[in-house]
Each structure stands twice: as C-alpha cells, then as structure tokens.
Image 1 (tube, helix red, strand yellow):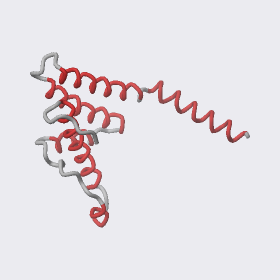
Image 2: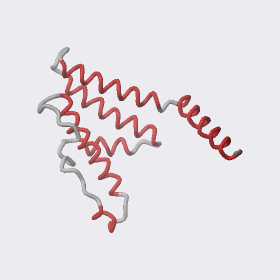
Image 3: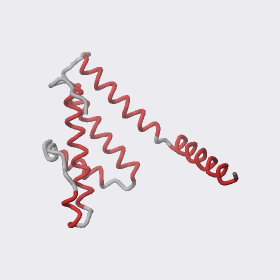
Length: 132
C-alpha cells in the first residue's frame, strides 16, 4: 500500500478502507464453519471505527449483491463527506472529489446495459471459439 502524508485525505480514507474491508471480512468469516476461522488473519484496523460494524451489517442485509455494493459505496461516500467537511476547496477536498468520482465510475460500470454488452461479447467469443 502507498504511504500517504499523515493527516491527508488519502491517508485517512486508506485507513478507513482497510477498516471497512476488515469489517466485511469479519462478516463473511462469521458465516464460515468455526474450524476455518483460524486460517484467516484480520487487519488490526478491524473494530477501530465506531459504528462501522453496524453500517456494514446493515449493508449486508440488502436483498441482492448489487444493493449491498451500493450500500457499501454509500458508507464510503459518507466517510469522504466527513473528510471533506471543513476543508473548503483545498487539496484534501479535491482528493475527496476524485475518490467520489471513482465510486461513481465503478457504479456506472455495473449498469445493466454495460453488463449486458459485456455478457453478449463474452458469449459471442465463446461461440466463436467453440466453432473453431
């Protein structure tokens, strides 16, 4: 992982992202058989952000994978809002804006039309390879 200046938006968000992923891993681990639990090492950030575990559990309760992903992105967005608050139009605010754009770009790539086109392209490629 990259080393960002302490106190920067990037460092703050990176620490948050590690904690978020740790909470997601914990939730997934809870669904595994107990004998598998010892195989996994959780990041030290797990449990370090008050309320994050509950937010992740709420996101995980969504009825489908797409909605779960949107809810996790909403958690990220809220963190970026918190980092951005009070920074005005600073480098930190611009960094948060860029990270928000990345979230929107990711979500856009999951749209039905894009997914359908990707599926049709893959199926067509398989059909062509099978005909050879």
